[in-house]
Length: 210
Image (tube, rainbow, N blue to C red; front, side):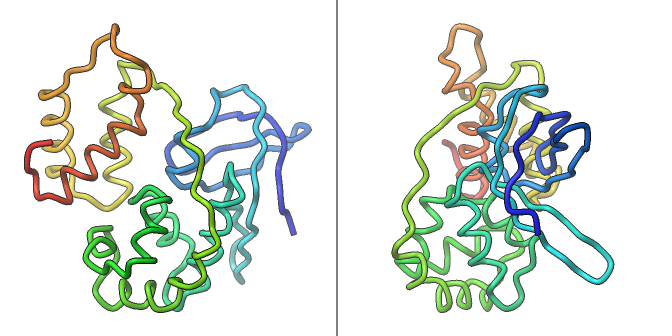
């Protein structure tokens, strides 16, 4: 059972990375909460790993923080939640907000995440509300992304989260129109993390102005 990996990032995308450990490449599935803070390719990385074993597959799920892994394990322990849906939940809402939503029992907020219906939202609150009481929030970290790839990264992230291409493009166009990216802006303000969060807020409001 693999519990952690320390190696070099050979390649990375929004939902999966390849980690080179001593010449062996490990494919690791990740949520957006981890993608946001990954270093560049060819850089060293240390990941907390959950090894998911099925009859026909063995998949590795990686996280930069122990909190992310704990939340992932709590999620897949809920009836009807598999690794794919767990990653989708972790990518569709900031983890500190997710913990807060569970504590408050806010079903409407959970239902805004693609793949979460009324029954699943109720089940998540019922089974996880008390379990997340002791979890601490993640420290705020940011990572800048190339200006030229910003729009493509945003679109890919929203499509991976289950939004239609039409809705995703509409949200991205509105964001970039209302606050166009400029090289003289602070890197944090231009980060994929910040813009994805804005897009998710916009989509949750039905396309109203940010």
